[in-house]
Image (cartoon, rainbow, N blue to C red; front, side, top):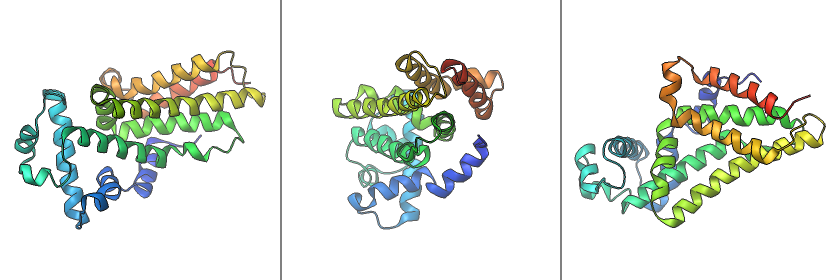
Length: 229
């Protein structure tokens, strides 16, 4: 597999442009936003301040007045982009899912070489979570404590990813490419290893391990866990 973090970033820009453009594309009609340049800049300011405040005082404790003061945007200006805190979290998660579906290409599974496609899926996930580290961390750490519907949506998206990993392992077994004795356990373990990268990035920074090196070691583990022939 020749995919590297550098080439992934080029692909990300070609497919998505950036996260703020993704938010605009998802919500400009619903919010009646006309000027793309202004709206994407506002989205960037607002969401970056949300991430900052969630780290310093916690998203649940954050008020819209806190966000207004941190961002320098009036309360009326904020309400052009969302109506309450839960909607901010919903928008962040929805945009992250949109970017993931675009970049991970899970639905484009061809069943031709499940081991290769498993490796590519895992690598893309690590690279995407590196590019959107604050987004992944926020959704995992903050959103599950909000309303039930959002929590269920997030859990469903996590299961979707784990099922995609599981499907590739099972197909590799069926095609005689691997001898994994417990696909359920291994797919769950690989999902945890993906979360490890964006939840405990400090640990790898201290060891000077970058995304490419993490992927290389992750894929070595895959070969051992699924017993590639």
